[in-house]
Structure formats: C-alpha cells, structure tokens
Image (cartoon, rainbow, N blue to C red; front, side):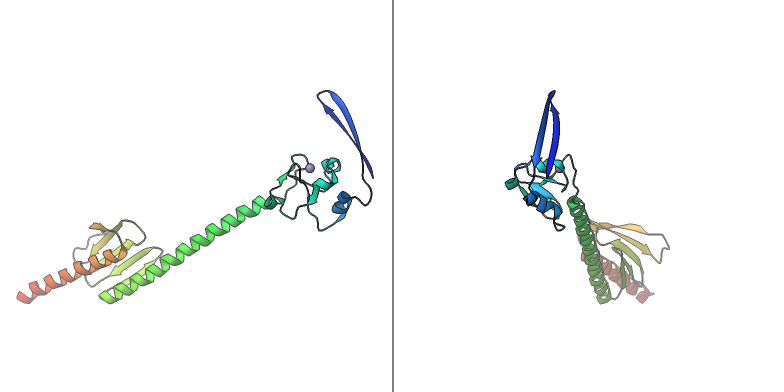
Length: 200
Ligand SMILES: [Zn+2]
C-alpha cells in the first residue's frame, strides 16, 4: 500500500511517500476490530485508526492502546482528535461518588434522628425527626431544632403563653445536650407547677 503526503513548512515544500506492506503492523492494527485507537510510543499521542500521521511513524513505535488510552498516559492527537470519552467517564464517576456520599450523609442523618427519637421516648416526650429537624412535643410545649447544626439553636413554643416559636438560649454543641436541656426545662416547670398548685 502506497501513500503520499505533502507538507508546506516554512515555505519549503516536502513530499513524503510511505509504503506499507500488506502484512504491516499498522495495517493489522487498523483492520483489527478490537483495536479502538493506535498510539505512538514516541510522542505519547494516540490517534484515530485512519489518522495519516500513523503512516509516518516507525512501526516499532506504534501500538494498540485500549479503549481508554488516557489511562495509559496517552494524549489525544490534535489533528484527528480521537475521543475515547475517558474524561467524561471520570466526570460521571465523580458525580456518582458525590451522589453516594450525599446518600450516605442522608442515611447518617436518619440514624441520628432515630436515636434522638429514642432519647425523647426515654424522657417521656414525643420526638419526631425528619430531614434534619426534630420536633419535640411535651405536655407543656413544643420544641424543635436542626440537629445537624453547630451550634444548635433551640426553638420553643410555650403552650401556656400561646406565643409563637422563639429561640431559647443558650445554644448547644450536640443534639443530646439540647434534649437534656428540654428535659430539665420541662421537669423544672412541672415541679414548679406541683408546688404552686399543691399550696393553692
Ligand atoms: Zn492523529
């Protein structure tokens, strides 16, 4: 197989004629359907199988380079612009990992939510966790806070006063601290009510 190429470099005209034997390594690689791209070991570029640069590369320098030549350190040729999709796969892989981490974060929040509900139960309150928020209902009032926040700001609605939610100070480092605060707050109020009503 004979091929001719002409170049115009710095106003000088070059013509190269390349002859490939029919049993050449290049021809075999080109006709092999399992070969996606052909790489040049010298330049570290990989090419489309029909790229004309391949005809000018010494036979010992060309080789098959797999489905994703970038994995083996080859760079896409600027002329034939082969596209293996490798970087697209890396990007998708990154997105998949981010999604996985997000889901893991979600399930972690869910586990914490369930644990906090159990603590509420132990204190004799009703606790309901959803989407990072826990609602705590006691005989005296309603509370809620975002249990992933740091610090945690507690919000409290007192049934007796009939006011809306207000931020209850101080803030807390952990959701368990916040629940203990609610417990102490409610127990104190109950104790005070017992004393007050007991003497009436
Ligand atoms: Zn090329």
